[in-house]
Amino acid sequence: MSKYLITSALPYANGPIHFGHIAGAYLPADIFTRFLRQNGEDALYICGTDEHGVAITIGAEKAGVPYQQYVDGHHKTIKAFFDKLNIRFDHFSRTTLPEHFPLCQEFFLDLHKKGFIKPAVEAQFFCVKCNRFLADRYVTGACPKCGAGEVRGDECTKCGEWLEPSKIIAPSCKVCGSVPEIRKVTQYFLDLTAFAPRLKEWLGAKTDWKPNVRNKALSMIEEGLVQRSITRELTWGVPVPLPEAKGKVLYVWFDAPIGYISATMEWAKLKGEPEAWKDWWQNKDSKLIHFIGKDNIIFHTIIWPAMLMGQDKPWILPDNVPGNEFYNLENRKFSKSEGWYIDTDDFFSKYSVDALRYAIASNGPETADSQFLWEDFAARNNELADTLGNLVNRCFSFMKKNFDGKIPAAGELKPEDRALLDGMAPAFEETGAFYRSYKVRQAVSRAMALAMAANKYVNDTAPWTLRKTDIVRCATVLNVASRAIINAAVLLYPVIPDTALKILAKAGLPPGDKPPDFKPYEPSLDNMALGEDSSLLFAKILPEQVKAEVEKLKAMGEAAQAK
Image (cartoon, rainbow, N blue to C red):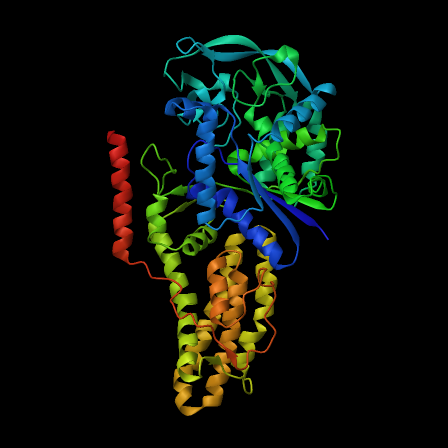
């Protein structure tokens, strides 16, 4: 049986993350991991903070604190946010841990020994006022491909283009704002051209990948790969392990993906099995899945695979890279500096974590950019309240009141009963296929279709009326409805895990030490005692709440602009 090694892009430890990040790389990975475990499959979910690079140095210098202190604080904040959202990693590490440095240097030396890394002189921006060479993100300007303004020096956040810093239009130093000059400097380059034939063959076989990911990578190969600089003039990072390269560190995008491996090594060490990481990273039966946003596609489909191909050890290559598009906020990108963001502490003081997970999953940026709209969030929350919450409440409350708090035994089944029951196996088959192929939106829709069918069934059969005219038939309807409720909860567990487990507990199923099996629930429900919890699953969000949230967001944006 295959083993699944799952990663999400390492978030930069230079600020809090937001719902846009969650939608792109973390919630889809968490959902996939939970689904695999429901099926009894071996899965390991690894992540951590990316703590090197210019984004870190700029942030720390602006804050006036040492680099390590700066990343320590953000590492803690980011992990707490993941915990709040019920994103459950098997291990959450960081790239400043001791195991990471020698591994990065080993990768560099293997590639250097084989001639895949060579020194060369390049033109680089130098800020006279700051008296230093400007690494990628110390430079800002316009994208030479799409023209978007205020892009960073290594990639365009609008079109996703991989940029050469010296080619951006109207450059300026991000620290002091002055116009930098071009100077020559020696750096070390990874020769991607040497890997082009193998990369093309490898990607050509990935016919099941998302078209946006595969096509972007193949297009870059067709356009012609180049030698890419993988060192920088910085004091913060992994030192280049060559005596003649003193004062240089590895480019953050060279060292960051190696963090997936060093994090797994740390996991194995903490587990008391220091060699266990090899069974994941050097095992042909292990499937490596990278969940990322579209701005990380090239790094995970070109640079990182080339780095793995050039090693002396039998590293596995990515089996799939389910890259998602961007997730925005009310028609604009999330931006704390522009006041266009959601205060998460305030949000979770009023709204459900599972409602957010459900809203993002239902409208995730799987094939095109999507966005968080307050009106849509309220609609998704209310869909849960009306479809799932109402179904659970009215059926279980009715049984508590009229059947001594038990699910009554089923009598003879009628065609409408069998129709609902017969639809459960196909619901699992189809929903499971969507989860497995990273189509979370369709999985959610198919799972909720069972809850909707159960609601219609209860409305049509009207057990509250049958109680007065045919108690046996009433009992049968409630028994069948209860089975549909249990199965809907199992189907939705990867998306709304806390709510799903709460529903199962309400139904009287004992808590287990593992997720509910992803298959139709088969044991008899006759006379099973319901759980004691009678609380509502979701509170509805009213139109005036939506209006207030939108007005607050606009006021924050206007205040930031004025400032």
